[in-house]
Structure formats: structure tokens, C-alpha cells
Length: 208
Image 1 (cartoon, one colour):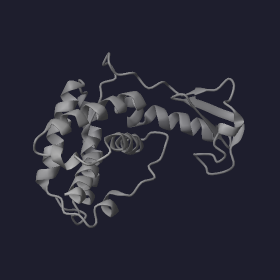
Image 2 (cartoon, one colour):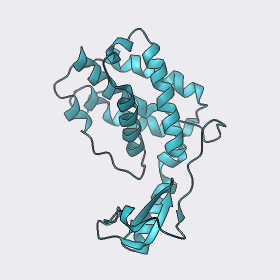
Image 3 (cartoon, one colour):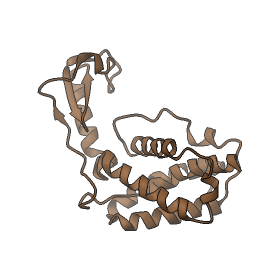
Image 4 (cartoon, one colour):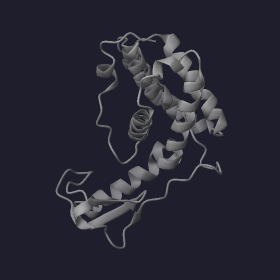
């Protein structure tokens, strides 16, 4: 049972790729646009490797994004970081605050659903919420890369079905409706979700 629960909870990570938050929702904070830091944060707290080029970072070349200061090797890397943030689905969906709110609301529905709630009875939900938010943020192009297992490896010894996938998806769609979805963003999210479905269900690549 616990193995199925863990599988389903990770499956929900992939299913949750189907979510979208309207940036016009009053209850969802918008992601702030990247801006150059007038004064960098404490040097000791800065990253030492440039997240763009992998070279040593210059603590004088920084950007503040969602209250975190990032250092870069050169101006070109900083410019690329800013462009990547502006063009990312992550920022278009509302950034950290919006994703956090949707994940929290999603799990309220999951834990109230008699079909799947028992799968989560012995899971640390605080940790599950955190992992979910980290995964989705990375999947949508957020600034912090996902460092957990890839979907296929995480499910290599587990058996999941369309029924499991669909049960989670129904709760997700209900959550999306609560958050006033924009169709053009949903389409982008769906494309990402479909790209990992076979991995989550341990099916051969290319299975329809």
C-alpha cells in the first residue's frame, strides 16, 4: 500500500503539470520581474558558480528574483537569466506564490477524495507539499533545477494504471477551475504533462 501511495503521490507530480493559475487572480501573487540588484546580498550567501555558464560567479554581477540574489560570471549570463525568467511558463503562471497556492489547494481535494485519500495516510504531507512545489517550479522553468529522481526511475518498480492517473487528474482539474485558468497557458502545461506520462506509468516511450 505504501509503495502505491508513494507512486501515486509522485504520479500527482506529473499530473499536476496540468495546472494553471491566472495571473489576474486577486488571491494569487504575481511573480516579480527580475531586476538588477543595487546592492548584492551578503557575499557568503551568494552562489559561487554561475547558473547559466557554470563558470565562477562574480559577486558584483547579480540579479534579485523572488527575493533571492543570484550571482553570474558575466553580464551576458545575467541577461540570459533575465530573459529565461521572463519567457518561462513558471513566471507566466504567477511564480512561486501561485504554484504554492495551487499545490496546497490540490492536496486538500486529494485528501478529501475517498478513492485515493487512504494512499496518503502515512505520508508526511508537509514534505510532500514541498517536493511537489519544487518539482513543478523546475518543470515550468523556475530558477532552481529539480535534483530529485526522474519520473521513470522513481516508478521503475511500481505498477500504476490509468485509473490512478485519472483520479488525481480529476482533482487537479477541479483545482484549476477554482483558480480561473487561462486556456493558452493550460495548453502549454498539458504538453509538458503528456511528455512524462509514459514515464510515470512505466510504459514504453511513444505509447499513446
